[in-house]
Length: 190
Image 1 (cartoon, rainbow, N blue to C red):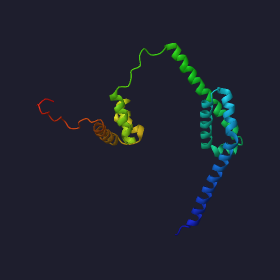
Image 2: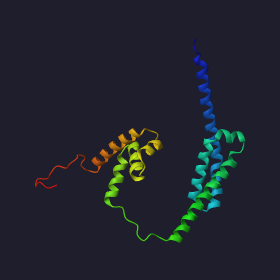
Image 3: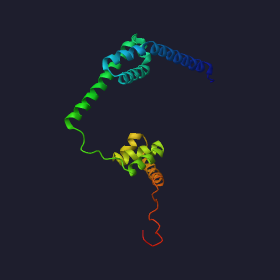
Image 4: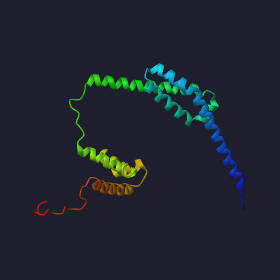
């Protein structure tokens, strides 16, 4: 039995056209409403940067639900409510941080980052993302390999392999010796 590929191609073209139409509708909606939305949230918060952030996040969430919002008929109202909630949440978090700071006070001394710390962070940034992630989860969060494997979606063996490779790469990047013992110096001392 042969399959008719014209029907499948027609569905794909229709889906692409529908996606393009949805994108155009969303873009028009955004262009028509975004400035006013920022102005309204700015009036609520008194901070333009916070207002812009809240509105941008609200539109990003709206795009993810665009088909449903468009079908319900009032995407502007939904974006307005979400943007206001995000702005108020951000404001509350800032207020709570300030209250905690007043209650607890500033730390007696904040340790400065030493050259070793800066070198380690720079070396970590040079590792591939998967290796950097297992190093951070395993060594900085102290998670067992099985937990790291579940979190990143691979086997525990893959985690151990990535850890091994990451440790080797870090040793090279940091100029540490990777052998079991260092070569003795000319005087015979280590």
